[in-house]
Image (cartoon, rainbow, N blue to C red):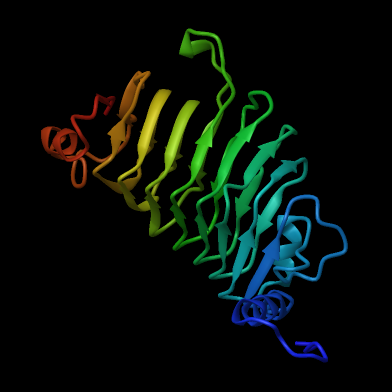
Length: 259
């Protein structure tokens, strides 16, 4: 710890020195990123400047700690390492500034936790596309910029889209608002959608022949046109065979049943 020749004058100074030493450790299981950082090595004291650098450096199963600041997104972030977590700390903001899908998940077991994501203008893209199994999206806030009513004229921007056949997706504790759609759930997607808050969308969750369950979701103000939409071709059986129970389990959701 580069102990001073005369020693440490106080217990607090010892703790500061310890903290500084720990923060300077490069640990591939815990990689740090801070917006605007240059020449970093991934330690907390000297973080990388981009999220993609963090993903490249982190071990399988490790965590990329995304620290405070605004992260302009002009190229796609490919989360292509299995079982890693992207964890927001101190309210980082990811700001999409290009007509592209900002986060594409292509590795299984990925968790994205506590990020805030928006865009400078409305783009007809989803903010997160899930293209792998066993993905968890937790405690994130995703919203779009203001668009002029009616909603039918809004750009089709979405918080999340699952690819076809994705299994065991978990959405929990997220907030989605001011978007055309909260999540578009493509055919044969399975998983659980629990305790999210969705408002000011044309359709909160669009179920297209998928099999995800819904529990404890709620709906803010301004309201969605519909909270849950069961599109044509979606099963008449479980988990969508009992519409009154589905409504009751999700804070009296408004449901458009188009089957």
